[in-house]
Length: 210
Image 1 (cartoon, rainbow, N blue to C red):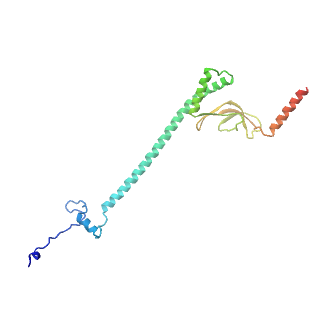
Image 2: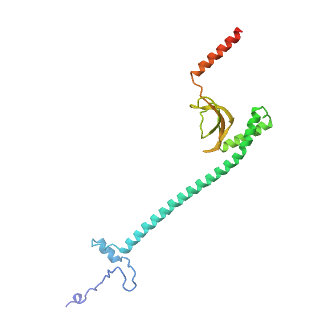
Image 3: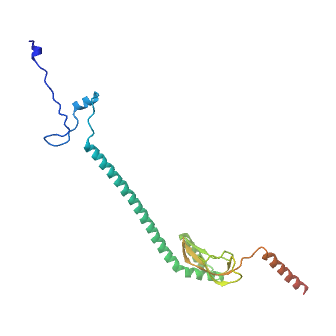
């Protein structure tokens, strides 16, 4: 027997168990297993631990997305409540100043609002309007019971319009601070205007004949 036949090649054993029997830990694929798989051998079965990790990762991602959405909704709600509180505080302050605006309007109507007082009044009105204060209630406007308070009625009451403004109304944004006190009357129709002009012409003719 030759020397080459007498020497036997060493036998190599590959432990393909996924769990280490001594430590109980999950084994990482060895280089030999990678080579075998790369050479076309059958791939190992799916790892249950990896599947469990993937499921837990998906659940944690969904929880994070839900928390992010809830926080965004909370921020929007807080911002909305803060704006509502600020607008309410502004409206309260402006309401206290409506009496001052009434006094200034009466002084202006009587010709007493001149000089430095007029400049101060204009600055005050401009500042309030800049904050969002709006006045309403003018002669000829359609009567709106949500904005106007009628204390005087004339005519049939069909499609009434404002004929007399006794006190202006004010609103701050969408909030009505004070209704306008008005007197309402029937709207002037196109047929009524020529009649009024005819009556005026007749009156002028009679005056000329006299």
